[in-house]
Length: 401
Image 1 (tube, helix red, strand yellow):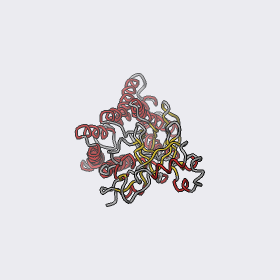
Image 2 (cartoon, helix red, strand yellow):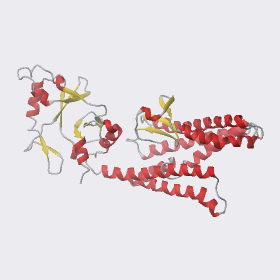
Image 3 (cartoon, helix red, strand yellow):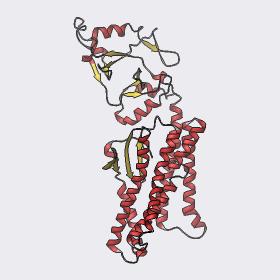
Image 4 (cartoon, one colour):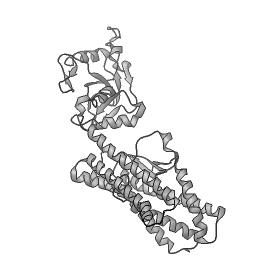
């Protein structure tokens, strides 16, 4: 249902949008399309008794397209419900593993997470119901009947299969929401749902491959291939969830105050002389306290970082104090601080709940930026209060024993 950040090029081909939400066809989707066509085409002639050859493959391609539309309907369910709850939905992608919807779930709650999770499978089950109703009005032995039967059965399977209680399936997100609601621990919920995902994977493989072998009925090559693909996807997703829960536990143990450096907010119209005077008189700067955080005043003083804001209150960048001091003293009172403000890379302003929180928001911002992560981050509350700055070096050192 969700996925990590990436570049636009890595999403695949943009094929449209759903109420303004970009929809991409992943570059791996042709692989699954070829597998579907190759395995479905022979069934066209054997089921209808009329067609084969090129026509059979043409019908199989039609089924692959209908299957794609079913995947998009599933993801549209997630995307539209997430947007209905006020979350920013970034994209929908159909790929080798079916599809995924990317939205900002950082402020979600257990209840909303559960509703968003179940919306995808419900969309498939609704399509299955519609398909079943229409099947009764067409010739079951014709091509249309075959396609309707296949799409209806596929949507019913996808709907119910995705409700199995383990990540990365939607049912796993329901388990996650339930455990989160009961325990209040989102990370424990993630690990529990991940371990259940591993259980679901083992049962799935044993049922499709192990059980037939025990009964002396070796599974077909097609069954083994599909089982291997789906099993690998499930196991990797479950393992990823477990590791994410463990990592987030470690991250949330680091308080924001431990890495937060004090910042002084100034207007861009303020003179360099005024800013330097404020910096020099800011209780002699700041220092590290005994707990590794930052305190004001005392020995080992360090000047605060000067953050410049525009006339409308927007954050513009960081003032270069060395450049400011390099301006001739007689001119410092005439030069606005805007002249020495360095613009920062995109993503350097990070929203955090409060000074008493942890560094999880900062770590997420760095992860989202990847190799382009800004060297300095600015922590700002939703009300616009600037709490301070955090360097990547300080953030990294916080996790070093």
